[in-house]
Image (cartoon, rainbow over the protein chains, first blue to last red):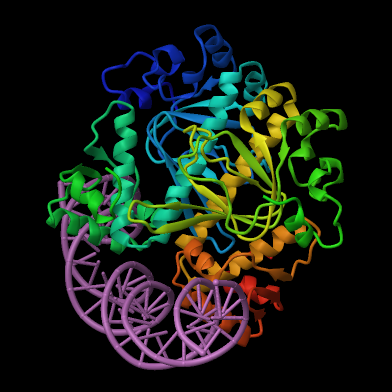
Length: 250
Length: 250
DNA sequence: CGGCTGATTGATTGTGCTCAATCAGTGTGG
DNA sequence: CCACACTGATTGAGCACAATCAATCAGCCG
C-alpha cells in the first residue's frame, strides 16, 4: 500500500512525489475547484484538503451508508459510483475523470447513497465538506463555484435521462464515447483517441444495456468505419457520423 | 393578468389572497426553504422572494436559454421541466410538486438548459439566485440547506437513472406512482389517493415509454387489483404488491 | 354539430435481452 | 513450466417485451 509507486506508474514522466504538489502545480487547476479562488484564497483551500496516497484499482473512496464527510476531486485515474439494491444487483451511476468532483450525493442525507471505487490506479484530493462550507461562506466565488458544480452534475443527469429515454442502444454508446472524448479534451488530451477506464460490463450497466449489445455495437461501429476499437483503446474516426447516429451535437 | 382568481380556484377554502401570505402561514413551511432559517432570518429571506400571481396551466416559469436569474419554489399546482432537441422532440426531465424547488439547472451556465411550464394552475415563489447566494453566505444553515436541496436533486436523478436502466416498463410506472404518493404524503396529503397532474403523454415521455404502453399498464394494474384508476385520479390499492412489481422499498 | 386532444385497445413488427458457446488474457498451483 | 481455472470480451440463435401503426372512444370547446 506503499508510497507513491502507483502514482508514478501513472503520471508518466513525473516521478517526483506528485501527490505532494499543490493545486498551483496541478494540471487540473483550470477545471477543478481552485478555478474559483484567488491566489491567497487558494492557500486556505489547500489547508483543508487532504491529498491522500494513490489508490489501487478497486479501492473505495467511500461506501453507501458511510457517513458523509468529504467530497473528492479526482486527480488521476478514474472512479465509478454505484449503488447496490437489496437484491444485490449493481447499478453504475457515474464515471468520474480527473478534474471532476465525486461524492456530492449524500449532502442531504448526511450519508452517502452511492459507493465510489476506483476503476484503475488513481489519486484523489479529499475535501472535508463541513470545512468547505465554512470557507464557502467566506469566499463567495467559491460558494458560487460549488453551486455551479452541483448544477452541472444535475445537468449531466438530465442529459443522461434524455439519453436513456430516447432508447436506441446506438445512441447511448455513441453519446458516452463523445462525452468521454469531450471531457478528455477539456483537460488538454486528445479528443478522438480515448482509453476507456471501465469494462464493457460497467458501460452496459451504466447505459442500461446488456454486455452483448455493447460488444456488438462496438464491432458494428468499427465495421462502419466510425471507430477503431482495440479493447479499451478507442479511436473516434468519424465523429460527425458518430454524432449523427443519435443526432447529437458535435 | 388577473388577480388571484386562479389561486382561489385552486386552494379550496382559503379564498383570502393566499399569495400574499408569508412563509410563516404557508403550509409548506416545513419542507421548503424556510426550513433552514430562524424566525428573524426568515424576514430576510422573504424580503428577497417574489410571490407572483398565480400562473395558468401551460404558462412558463422560464424557458431554455433564458438568462438564469431565479429559482422557484412551487406553492401550489405542479410544474414540469423539459428540453426540446434540435429535431423538435420534447423530453420531459422532471415533475415538481408543492414544496419543491425548480430551476437549479442553469447555475453553471448562467442560462437555463431546461424550460419549466405549469401542468395546471399553479402559484410559485420566485427567489433571485444572486441574492440567495448573498444571503447564504450570511446564514450558514441556509447555505447548507441549499446544498442539501441540490444534493437531493442529484439523488433523485440517480434513482431515476436506476429506474430507466432496470428497464421493465411495469417498474417504471410503479415507481413513479410510489414517488408521487410519497411526495404527497410528505406534505400531509394522502399517501394512496393521488391525482396525477400530468398527462399520459408526459408520463410516457418522462419514463421513456410509448403512451400506449403506459395506458396498457395502468389498465393491467387495475385488473390485477393494484390500482383503481379513473383518468388522472389514481388510488393505490395494494402498495405492497405495487412495490413488489419492481421490488421497490415501500 | 364537427373538430380537437387525450386515452384506450388491438395487431404486427423489431430491437435488444437471454441463453449458450467460444476465445483471449491473466493469474494460480501442482 | 504448463495445465487449469477464472474473468472479460465477442459472436450466434431464438425469443420477449415494448414500439409502431391503426382504429375507436370520450370529453371539451368553438
